Length: 461
Image (cartoon, rainbow, N blue to C red):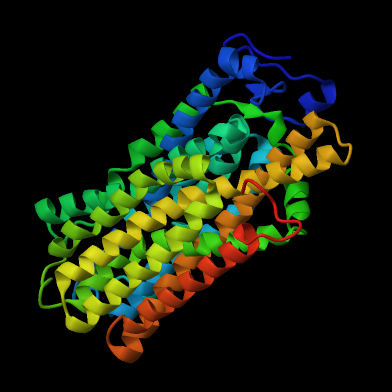
């Protein structure tokens, strides 16, 4: 059954028994042009809007330690290496949680899980508000920072859910908007931190957290009232087992480490890097905070453009040239570090943020394109077209969650690379060289697997 703007029903008694809550859609055919134009587009857009808002707040909580470390002055007694761990910890947990969050969409429904995942953001927010003050031990803050990782899990469940709402020709754009809207919260929370630093000083970091408590409640209420569950998202766990058998799964995870891992890693570390790399030019944290939001802001805004480019020119082509440009950007940062040029350093990092945003959009477009190409081969082998489309959507949603989990771990690697480089070299040059080498590997892998002419290559990716 389908709904009339939108009366949602379940199709069988068995399905009704296993489901939690209401607002389930059983008949969802986005590839059907008439269905999409009369019903699907409106419903999909409404779910996208509220998904973006919820994910937006989730990213705030996940990335909040990139701001809070700027408040940890001498009265807290923490060195730069410890502060890099405080930003790496939530990145790690957020990456690990993306897999169970992906499963949760299939088990509980996209709407239902959005409500739960939004309310879970209250836990780390309240914990930070209680413990963050001078005299707190580093081990206590490290444990509290781990809980902020729940905000990172929201991304995987949101992307998996929205992937099923849109037809193949709009997936790049829709996933780019959904992810970009969430990513925008990285610069947004940094702007909130800048506002607090500029008005209240470093003595009131808990004011940053307090500003998000009502927004968390609003995100949960919005999902409850306006979002829907899709039956097509069921059995995600089985789909992940399936996609693990595809070599493209691990290749896409590698590429997403290079794009999203760079974005989230740089977003979490950039303020600290400025303070440590250019201490004479940033005697006060507020001066660093005034610059840290620019790169993540541009990288977030341009992510839908990366998806749209991939819709037009193919994701593999955009991704290939984007990694070349990222290697050049990292080389500019390395050069700026060696000649101690702050303007060139900021220019290189802004380039990296923008390019990581484009790459985020193009790589996520590649995921549904891979399984759409495989579905065409299966149809050619005799599989029913509708069944092939359902498999492709289910597998793409599973890989979005899996690649998102692995890619987020790249953010941990970025922070640890900075930590080790500053410990051993007293600058970030070792990390920048590692980034250049990794981008070169990603570029080569993209060309060999998806672009080089060879028998059996998936077309249209």
